[in-house]
Image (cartoon, rainbow, N blue to C red; front, top):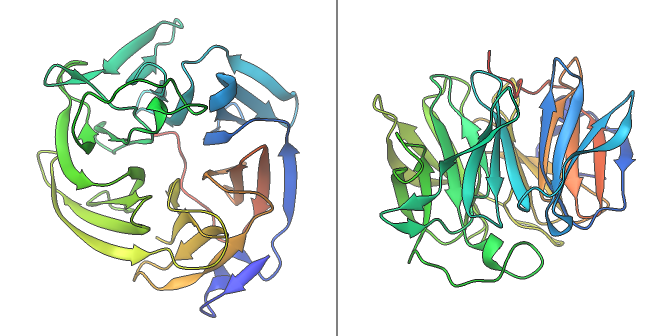
Length: 296
């Protein structure tokens, strides 16, 4: 299961991490998100238009169906659910009373492509990627693309005024902040690499150099991406999940049983990596804890 590329790898994930299948029978799993207080996991099953929930107490249940073929999920600073919706090409926020409010829908009068993945900064800023995957058969609703580029955005003052931060990606996808929040990592599925940006005081981005590449054998490409408590970056890639040290050294690959799309740290000790992989969700126990998904 492990492809070791640097001796430090086993000090991060262990020498023989246990893999447990906690759910299966889905069409294509994505967007895992752990709720520490509720001790449950949410994930999207895009083709089935089904937002699912799992807990050790209740097993797999329905959280929301239909869900506009949701993909990436995150919590905002108030603990409200943020959802990237493929079918509606928007980002929504779920209020405490259950209302679903669009917070990003259009850019300069044109509908967004299909928001894909999303993160919330420590100051409350919400950042998301916008490739066109949700305009394709199976993963979304086939329809022409209105925008001529694939962007990275920050949510603006209204749903039609997101702030465009970068438009030179082929397929922007997973994203995560550095531990201090001063850098934003964004991967490009088509180009098989991870880029890093400096986050400015006004929430904008600068730079954007290539930070690392996901090289290897097997199916897979950069998709979901997460940071652990030591600054190591986990990123989907060929064969499974590629782990990079803070200095961008490729530590190794956690090879998974199925094509892997995303992952999230969870459980009370944040040492369980919940992996969405095609028809299933797996739990992998690692040594270094992740970071909490719910902002405090």
